[in-house]
Image (cartoon, rainbow, N blue to C red):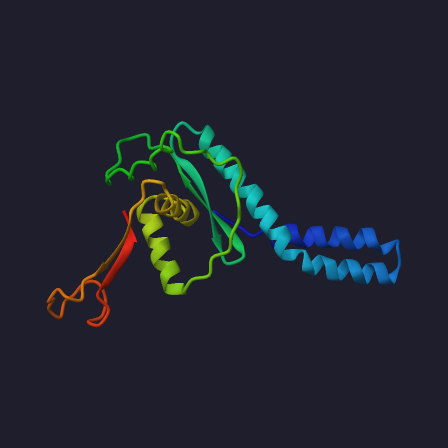
Length: 181
């Protein structure tokens, strides 16, 4: 299911202009500039509200779920309905483990912007889809694992090991493996 939120943002801009009309031309011009300046914030607020609604719907469902995914400036909804008959394909992976005892449960959410090469984003989306998660959920779980008190950061120099031409971890000169366990 696809949702274009542009009409809602445009409606907000029209309402702002209508409210400023009675205050004169200068106020209308200011409202027009503000309307365009508020466009990204209005889109973000709508996306947050819709994502929160999808999360609440998923929590209320006995099985299945609703994911909201960003597609350019539009939203796509992925609904995973409970299956009435046993699935022919393998079952999706189990949900992420609950927080470790003693680990604080987040009280609120923080929004960040991550810039990455398109090729990395595509690979991350593929990995999230393979895990049956939205990209956001997959990234949150990845960061949560990496920042856990029990996480172990691995940084191994493999340059002294004589690998053949099919070395799986990068080019011949780059034989360093890093990550978290």
